[in-house]
Image (cartoon, rainbow, N blue to C red; front, side, top):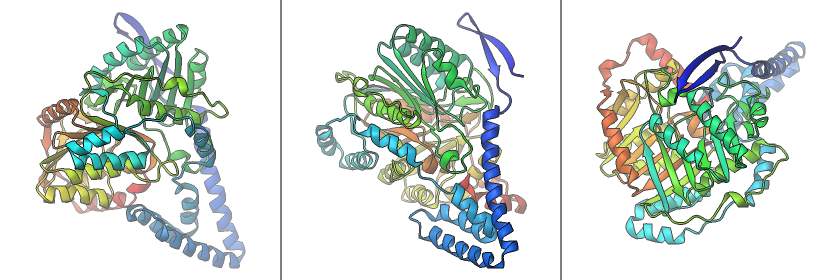
Length: 523
């Protein structure tokens, strides 16, 4: 039975349905995955017991899997937990590896993406690069690398506005949505019924009646228990072209790993929004879950919105079988913005083979390596590989003032415990760690020396850096970076500066942290 609660917003009465259970479709998908896993592992064990020669075959396969894991072109942090699992639990270990270690996107999705890519937009950015190289060679080289590995462009004709809270971005989004004339693209990891989404939905339905094309993507796992299991169908009945991202069907492979963590809103191809803010009431502090919810976002207006448009169309085309859409009308010619300052590079990140490199991680590392005076980071999670950890340490040890802000009130206690396991190592190198005392900080913001920054969806954890589809906006010389710096300084005043005495240090806790740290790449 769904619980209902009513509330008043802007003199209108709303009803929110509380989905306090897993819908049958999700339960069935999980059960199918578990059942398939059990059957395969049990079958192998029976063969070993009944046919002694099978033991030799299994042992040989175990050796081959170990060799395969070691030979993989991936980081040791990801290899170690799988090696332990395969060695300690021979049969179940390598079967789980075969079934769940896959990080590459499925072939059917790749086929759909290739069909779409031929019609993506083109943009000439040689002039922008020439100007940036003259202004700051190091920043230009960062942008060149990012554009090369993410297949994106450098834009200098786009205005950027920074929002230090979801509370402030919400009314701006509503205002722009009401001005839509041609199309609206909306893609979020989480959509949940409530003040935020219901207010947007009312506008979307009105725009459909006006003849505006409205497309919506939400992640099937991210929005689980937030909306009904058939919510995309319900939206389509109202004229909205909606789809789930990677609908959960019970396949024990990349389906559980390669989720869309993106947050994208595009209006008429001219205005775009992104950042850490999902479409749920806690993100605008209309609902209290973990104290005050601190999040950030940005509004783009200008040619750079083309990249957000392409990312949306890529995801839509990947998830809607046999419904390719003509893309030309979604990339209008855009006049340069008179108030534009600096340079921006919007980009996407995700699993292979679409993205051959870990784009978000490389971008963050390049920013830290270029820092001369200070580097500020806000992230809800701090679960990083040795390479990124060393990059942060190196910046601090060469005299850069590195400050990292994480939540003081956790949303997931185990993840919070894992985050704290990195504090000691980083603090010994001179990194300053702060926890946001009023509540949960969900912002994914990076700022170096006041002139280079990034805002997007990328957390400092394995989910974001390795598994998920993500997006961000790299910025250099933009006026909004001053607002970002002011916000970080004001946020630091509300934080607790951490030191060794504040961390649990008993033997049992250290053992627990050591174990979960080993398996962090698999979570």
